[in-house]
Image 1 (cartoon, rainbow, N blue to C red):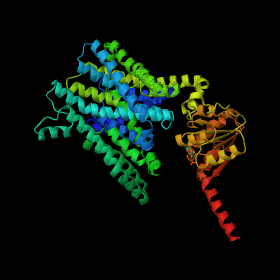
Image 2 (image 1 turned 120 degrees about the horizontal axis):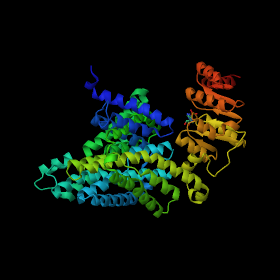
Image 3 (image 1 turned 60 degrees about the horizontal axis):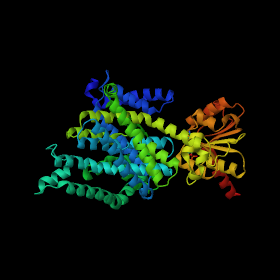
Image 4 (image 1 turned 180 degrees about the vertical axis):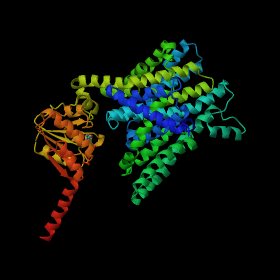
Length: 576
Ligand code: AMP
């Protein structure tokens, strides 16, 4: 079979292979891997010679990435969280959309476009990309922090506004007579042809609000009972495979149902499905099950964005593109910063929210596409939006980097304001624990603060011995921070993280993580940095134990054998 007969396979394979190569290269150059994914997209896109992947397939695949990402966000987000940030997220999002739309309209007027085109252009520049925002917050362990919740809540409101816009734009276009076409919404079309009168703008608006309300209602009443029930049932079958399947079926099924039946976006549907599940104790397992697929499809998202980009436009129309980028990166963040500060939130929160939203992505493409197809937006508008999106997505990690350094530098000065919450961004950027404790020396490093590590760390803490914990997961990291431990957040496999934990001056290292391959890598790095270190590590089999000893571990504790000995000790205690 020739590869051209299998566009789906060649698109997935081409995109993933090239994204992997360029992502690894970007990582080597100390750039975020997503820059590599975007460039991979440009390579497999139609604007560069060589292999061309199928654009519409790539876009559809990337939608699955959006669904799984939003589902994951929902899993960590409760209704309570959403309600708790509404006071700032709702006015913030609305003001930002308004401001950005005006800026876009201004630029469009300068370019001589129509009012409708200008409004649509501005609207497209006003919404941030879900994927970019979530990825950025996730990488920095900020999703659960207050600033993270505000940014996500803000995004949800923007998402809702876009759902309205996607329905209203065609209606407006029809009303303005710029196209004789139908609405993009099948339900509106069906109603229009069934009713003896035109729905008109207020009718369409009301219908959309009713549909969103209906969806939320159905989710809260039916979904809330049915979804956890289905998941508990499959969990009890004992089949891991079925459970995994159930999670995927729920995430994708609700998202698609929301889109097809209620006209709500796929992302929003998935977010709700996740949020409903977040109340179940199985939510952690559900989140874990979707991780690998989510990551793979999120990569496809960036590749598909890159594919849309024609690099020559940077030379053909540099000035309007520069203006577009300035609106996205500077205009929107200044607006967001001002709004958050107006609510008397700390400067740190304002900066992080501003930076989170200083980019545009998927919704902007959809709006631009719609605008062009309805004849409202000139084709150049779509190209500017695309270029602005790519440039702002590439600039976004740099903006985060700058923001974190700014915050880290000003951390002592900003401290009185920042004490209201654990400030993970500062911890992250400087490696300093909250409260600016000095890093201990001659200390013990515990890697992992789970079932094993937290017990070890607890003992050291009680005895008042110098201690540093390295933890990768957001929730255990928060727990360690709360316990007042000097914490370094990140993957201990990373030599930078070990260095921040003061590996060279440490006395003991306890590697309390379950994955022995990662544990081995940690030991290898640690040995190299400190020959005198006493290393204890966790293992699950004789093979693992031998492997870890070979890498320089002094004490290998085989978990299962200790469990057996513990059980026997109880038994012998009874028998005596
Ligand atoms: P447990 O198996 O319950 O002791 O949990 C292990 C803990 O180690 C979890 O909290 C993980 O988040 C954490 N962990 C696993 N791998 C790493 C790693 N490479 N670096 C830092 N923390 C890790």
